[in-house]
Length: 561
Image (cartoon, rainbow, N blue to C red; front, side):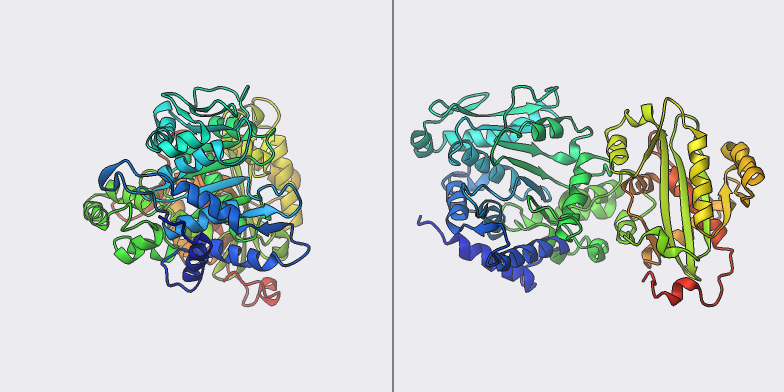
């Protein structure tokens, strides 16, 4: 078969997405907008990258030199779908203008539902990076949480190689049981798992991390990413479906990719593609038109009849529905009967600083943990009668911070403040409370008598702060929980986007009594909800405050909607 015009195919896909002729979610549309803008910027002398059509086409042609070996397609030539041509071309087509023209992208994050052909495609990319990229001593690794999972992509690569005699002969490749080896260049391709404790001896040219959502710890991710420092143009290639761990490394990469696509983070070396369903269509999960948005290979590697069958089961079972949304529509969800719609919560994130709300009535709620657990402060503003904005401070003993990778990351990013030693230093918490109360118009400090009575007495006696006791019961929390759901749905509350708070919000479960009152609970001890509890305490007090007809905030023109 003659080589196809990959440049034409890729650009046609980009245009079809931007014209909304091809179903695509917001993130794919932003990805295509990024590529269109980059192609325009190439003409600028200040733009450090060039678009190399030949380089992009060379990789696409290499991938299509292999044949399928599974199912009905077995024996047929591998044919990249239009979206795969687009993504492959963008990743490999952009190079630095200055010699020796190294690749622009160093990190790739691909998030797609199951059965969209990402593993076999990635395996072929691995073979290109092994022997088609001109890298002497190339090392390619697939990594996962288990050895069996890590070997899935490797096995695909091995079989693709074994069934392509022309490829084996052209590059002198030996496809063995545990490694694919090129003696002439001393290059090899193998798999690793979480059992590997360090990156000692690894020198990755390509690191493939499979099903990143399943990685509860950062070990494999950090081992492979840190092993690439000695390479001139390494590539970290992550493939995954959506998951349920909102504190894990995968969700971190998911949100980072979104930030890059929204131009919130300027990282020209990061490429990310997220195929999912737009938030407004989450309720239409059983609509075949919505399925096409999340599944670009629908009708190719994914049979629509299979999705139809799974959707019927999802209508009968909450568990099956959760799995369908996560694995088939790529919607991130928390495990269990989650109270808050996390997608809607995240949509309320804002980069407006707390200082912009000076002069607005404020509440500073304290959920004081035990000496060894998470303590939360929530600073809540009510600038208008029906709008709110909240900001969070979290404290945790330094030794406890070290116990969980996500705590370490949040501490490094400034979302969590470690206190010295094994126990929470309440003096640090007290100092933060006094500082915030002096800076803003804090009317009250809601607190829980069970844990905070002594600190509350000190704040009232020594600093003259007005404390408001909130008893931890249904009567205190139910009105606030119901109100918060409505505020989030209508986007009438802003928050600071803290991933630590988002994780805690995903941990909240709602206990409903016979009178339809709701109360926040958690399923397990390690699933912290201190942040949401502090927000509910603050909101409960703020809801009974009478806001003046026109606030200073309204005159500043900073409405939340």
